[in-house]
Image 1: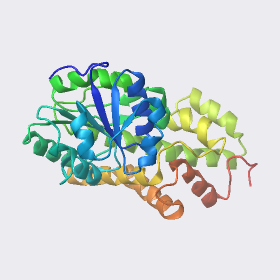
Image 2: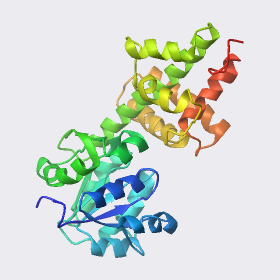
Image 3: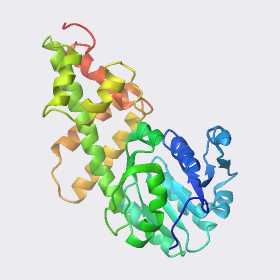
Image 4: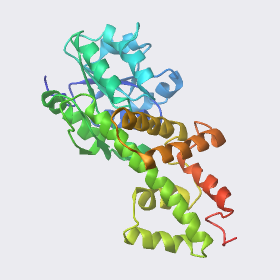
Length: 307
């Protein structure tokens, strides 16, 4: 496959949301022509001044591009967009590539890749980590799975969007399996840090000092290092990843663990806590809002003196 170099390649981007918006902007800044589609046309229209072109439909997008990126909520939507009756696979020329950067179910990615291969197309999974902050700064961690030749051809696109790119395996679903493991650890780190900081405050410790010690010692994790200073201590609660999406990813991980005979106590517990948050705050709530649930259970707000 020919390398997808900037300046000569048009990228189709399906899914202009919290992640897709900055990612499509970065592709355009990286000298890729970008054609975007979303079920919310206003999201695409907002990118017009950034040089991103809009598509009237998935079929229209597919006819105009050299490669397609999907950044969508789950495998149900990915399947419909890629291989539904009006999906992009019905209009893409043979030999072209679809890159699913969503958090999709690995076994369904394998099945979808097989179906589009029968149509003469390529599909690889290349999910990302780093959230909206990483998408905006083009510092995402990207974990492509698929044949080495195809991943290498797409590498200039990945390097435009991210900083750490690791080819996971030849299997197209391997990147999505890795993303599932990553999000399990990310969620667990966030929940444990919330419980720890509520406890620290209840014990009379100043939150800022406690956080400084944690980040200088063995208690440091992704939440204490990034989410607490940026979103939790200021009580901003806008890290950009929803409670609903993380609950979906944890449910996927729980299913995969069961299917593969893996005991997953922490994973299932994290899923249950996110389920409680889902009921209390709704699927569109920011996952950092779950701190308020820990505070309610303990009768202690982190920003207040001990109760």
